[in-house]
Image (cartoon, rainbow, N blue to C red):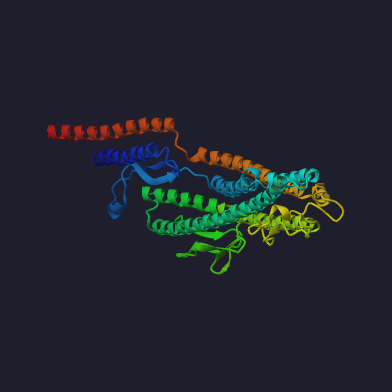
Amino acid sequence: MSDLLNIGASGLRAYSRALSTIGDNIANAQTPGYARRTLELVENQAASNMPLYRSSIKPGGVAIQGVTRSVDQWLIQDSRISSGDAERSATKLDWMNKVEAALSDDSNGIATGLGKLFNTADLLTADPSNPTLRAQFLQSVDDVASGFRTAAGQLSSMADGISSAAAGEVDSFNTNLNALEQINIGLRKARPGSTNEASLLDERDRLLDELSSQAGVTASFDSHGAVTLTATATGDTLVGGGVVTPISVSAAADGRLSYSIGGSPFTTATGSLAGLAEAANHVADQRAGLDTMSAQFANQVNAAHQAGVDANGNPGQPLFTGVGSAATLAAASLTTAQVAAADATSSNGNMLAIGGMRGSNDPESAWAAHMATQAQATASARAQDAAATTRRDAASAARSAVSEIDLDREAADLLRFQQAYSAAARTIQVARDTMQALLNAV
């Protein structure tokens, strides 16, 4: 009779726990990082009483082995790799689009200013003494200089923005490393198969997902599920042996980023940190290219203007100052009479020469080619991002197919275990009624 009671009691305990587990699944159906849990139940072997082994004997019934999570480690790893690649491409593309916007004519007006300068020079060849056209010519010079300064300022602000974003991302990365070590401590203390252990494993996987999206990392696990995390590219230990080694970031004068760990370089080819480093390199290249183009253009136009003669018969003066960089380029303070429209032989000869600068290698063509190169780079980054995003979505879907909550399945399991719980309760009731009947018969 005691066996019947124990069988019923074990059933009540097991099926109550199973119902609780299903309830957790349903409640967390939309919780990011939550993996479906199942309660592993096994049959207890019944045995007769033996005096020497009475304390180790278990009556028949059902026993709880523990809570297991529905996960596939290969799919998880594939999802993390694809997520890191997608974050890198998305981060880089975001800044590439900003660079393209900063260099566009809508933003700085460089292309419009160049066209206006040469168009006004053409008009001055027909009426070289016209003060209005001379003023328009000087204004176009100022517009071009202002456009280069605007573009340089936007690229400089962009470099600062990338540096700030990288610093914030590094702080987040280090925070996640510290949180992961706390999870490791909890996992080493958790009872195997417990709900607490399952919750810690969910949080461990969520942190690893986050870290993998930030940088290239490799995880290995001990028997408790605790993580040793290393940098994929260099093998440096980030979390392991109870020690957390944070990373740091520094920006060079031109905005290029470098990461380090324990004083040594920390390199990563994937994740948002890699995307920020690539974006910083691109912006630095664009800033250098803008300085080169502004200097070449200013020197070319200055030389052409200085070859002419102004309205007072004096040699032409430089039209631009601060030629060293796009950020310092400015229009010289000249009067309309100082516009050198003439040359030694005619009143419009120098304007003819300046207007004749248009051609395959003129500043307008060089700027258009520069913009085309930037557009091609942005288009390439966009294509890479589309491919990486598609792969990430497919890997995430395959992973979710294993771990996600199917409410129909949970509803069916809920009904099944409710019936099993009722049967266990009925077993206890039968044992009670039988015992009562025997007592009444005495």
